[in-house]
Image (cartoon, rainbow, N blue to C red; front, top):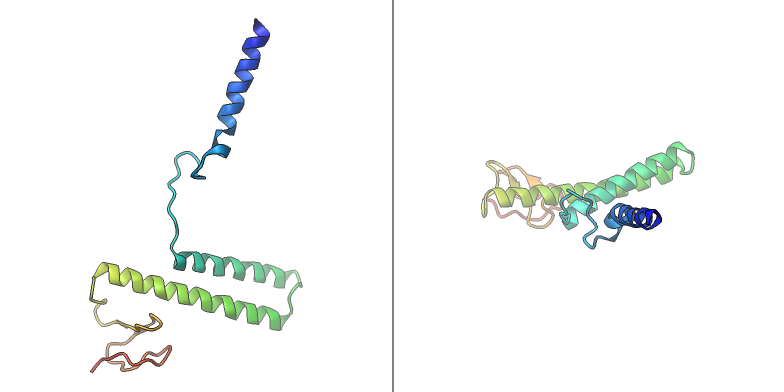
Length: 129
């Protein structure tokens, strides 16, 4: 009788401990699952790639030229994502309007001064008169 109770107790404890591994949504207890947007994912991926390249450079796995090229590539991706996120936040804050004194390029999403006629990033006409 005592052995059966012991086995049952071990099975119940094992099921309790293993339960998080079998959850379908992949979240741990008490965590909220929020799907990151494309731009947030791109920003986080670029940050991770820069950190990995810096580690490889510090451990002498990358040459100076290779490190500079990788850092420039991933920094450009991170800047693109942050610019798009800023533009999205600004459009959500004031639908149809931008922050006071700031314009955004419809092509690349980069900030431009209010008097600018062309985007400082891509050169596209902004339509300001």
